[in-house]
Length: 325
Length: 248
Image 1: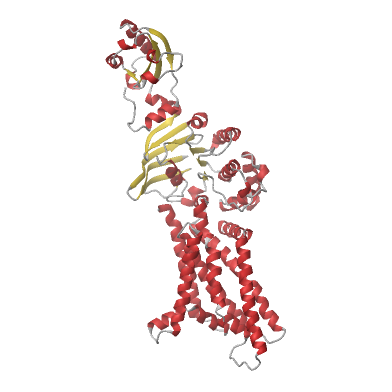
Image 2 (image 1 turned 180 degrees about the vertical axis):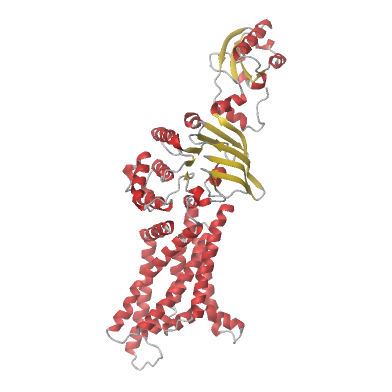
C-alpha cells in the first residue's frame, strides 16, 4: 500500500510538487500521468526515497519513509527512468549485488535472481555485460532488479520505454500478473498503456494532483456522455437551446468529424456533464432529439462517442482547465 | 554490514575490471622501481657515501617521488567513486535501496583502500631483494608502510569527499589533486617559516616529514591522530553530502 499526504517539493522558489495526496491499495496498478514537467518523476523519486520532500508524509507498505527509511525502502522495488545500470558488470553479477544490498540472505540470492530474470525473460543474458545489452534488455534487467526480494510496492518510471511492441506486451502482461499481492505505481506518457493495464490513475498538472480514481471514474468525472449527431440544419441550433437542455456544445464541434464522408457542418458533438444529468441517459437523449426535431434541426443519425482517456487527460491538463459546458 | 561488504566487492570488481587500476599499478611500479633502483645503485657505486640512513630509509622517507605518487594515485583511484554514479544515474538505485549512506560511503572507501594496498604490495619485494646483499631492519620497513598507508588512507578519504561534490570525474580529480598539492606545498613551509605557529602548523601537516619519521622507525601518536583525522573528517562529510542529495 502507498499512502501520500500533502507531499510537497520545492526547488528554491520553484514548487515542483504541491500538496499531493493519494492512496493506492494492494492489488492496484496506478498510472501516474501528467504532461512533461508536471512533477511525475519528482513524485516517484520522493516515493522511492531518492529525494526528500520539503513537506508531507509518505507511507510504503505501512512504514513511514521519513521516520523508518530503511524499513520502508526494503518494501519497494524501483525502476528509475532510463534504467541506469553498471555497464562493466555482467547481468547475473549485477543482480546478485543488488540482491545483497537489498538484504536477501546469501542462500536465497541465486534463486531470487533466477526468478527475477525468468519473470522478465532475461535468462539468456545472465552472463552478458550490461554494456553489451540493447535498450530493451537494459530496461528489463532494471525491472528484474526492481522485482528482487519480492517487494510489496513497485515504483516504475516509464517501464516500457525503449521496448519493441512484443516486449511491451510482455512487460504489460508481467505487470498485470504482479499486481496480485502488490501495489504498483507507474509513470508513463503512453495513455494507451494506462488504459491497457492500470486500474487507477493519478493525474498531476503543474505539481498539483488534478484527478485520482479508477479509469471509469476519471472518464465519468468529466462527462457522462459524448454524443455525435448528424443533423440536417445545424444553423437552427443555438447554444441557448443546448444550455437550456443541459447539454454542452463542444467548442470544436465543427471539427469533430468522425468520418471524412460526412459533411463537417452536418455533424455536431454534444457532451453531457454529471451535474446536468437528472434522469437516465436514455431519457436525456430522447429529450435532446425531441427538442432538436421540434426546432427543425432534423436528426439524421446519432452516435455515442467513447470518451478516451486521452481526451480526459487533455482536458485535465489543458491551459484553460476544462471545456466549458 | 551485508550491504557494506556487497558495495565493497562491487567497487573492487568495478575498479579492477577497467584498465584504470592496471595502468595506475604499472605507472606506480615503474616509477617506484626506477627510484629504488637508482637509490640502490647510488649506494652501491659510492662506497664512501656516509649517510645516517640506508637505501630503504632513503627510498621510503627521503625520495620526493613517494609523496608525488600519492598525488596521482589517490585522486585517480577515488575520482569515480560517486561522480560516476551521479553522472550515469546509478546513484538512484543505491539511494532507493535499504542501505544507509554510511554503508555506501564506507563500502566504496574500503574498496579504494584495498586497491591502494594492492598497488603498493609489490614494493615489499624491494626489502626482500635488498636482504640478499645487506641487513634489513624489518621494524623500519613496517613503520614505513604504516606512514604510507596512513597518508594514503587519508588522501583517499579526501578523494571520496571530492567525488561526492561533482558529477564530473575530471573535476573530482582536479579537486582532490589540488587539496593534496596544498598539503605538499604546506609541508615545504616547515623549512621556510621561522619557528612559530605557521612553522608548527606546516610541520604538523607535512607529508614528507611524516614519511621521513616513519622511515626512521618512528610512529608517533601525533602523526597517527593526524592521519585518523584526515580519514574521519572527509568520510563523515561524505556521508553528510550523500544524505544531503535526498534534500537538495
